[in-house]
Image (tube, rainbow, N blue to C red; front, side, top):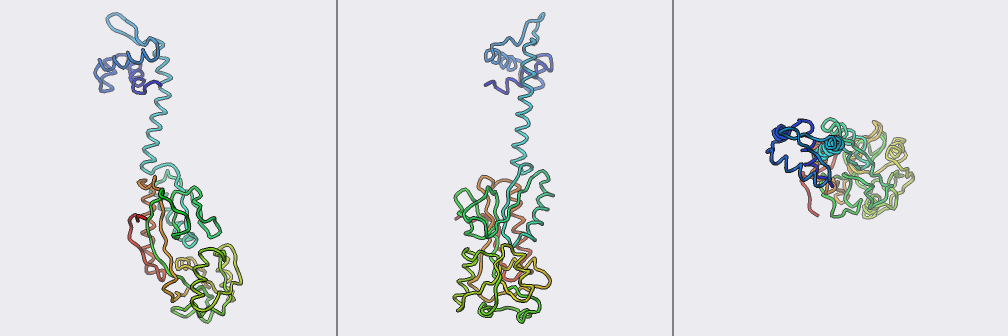
Length: 313
């Protein structure tokens, strides 16, 4: 394979018309330019220079090689710029997965901030809903989700973001709607609605807490999306138990009441592929998620932000 540096020297000699002028343009000595051309002549088997009076001039063959070399060198320059942009987080695409409880609030804000900071970056978004296969990363680069929802390997760096409690969702005219907090046992006789698969780790956690309180939840509606659950609750015939962050995007006719159960909590973390840990855009996303958690302390019951910084596991 021909050496790109020698091809650059040849192109410079063709463009400037002399070895001396090329040496000045490239910051080389004339002897160094001549040496590069001599080696290139041996590598190609082509005569690149010919005598002209007391000096030399490039041959037509050299001009043809320089013209073709220009295409290759321009492509290499473009590749260098591309690599620099990717290293700086300016171009390319990052694929971001997120939990349902932040889909309508944090994610739109995050996408806006990323677009403003990195206008040339593509941001692919994927909802990590409860119906998805556990243990699958789906080609994602960054995932904001509950711990334990994937089989995280050594190729991931983890950032703990927050811990949160759970809330009971009831209609605004429900007898419990004015309560500052409720116990799980107070929901024992209610019809429940949930978007969690009943055999999932998400609902099993709630079910275990209910069992400890002395009952099994009576699930009467099990739609596949959170919006439908809220619709069922709004009728006044159903209640639902959801993570605290879900209370950020409720309808005005649905109320969220903190549940008095210290064991019913979960931790959310940002997981970044180790190969992208130094990527400025990935770092920016992690920073923005931490900032969003800090802003929710006073807005969402039971949220405890965890300080920024990678967690070794």
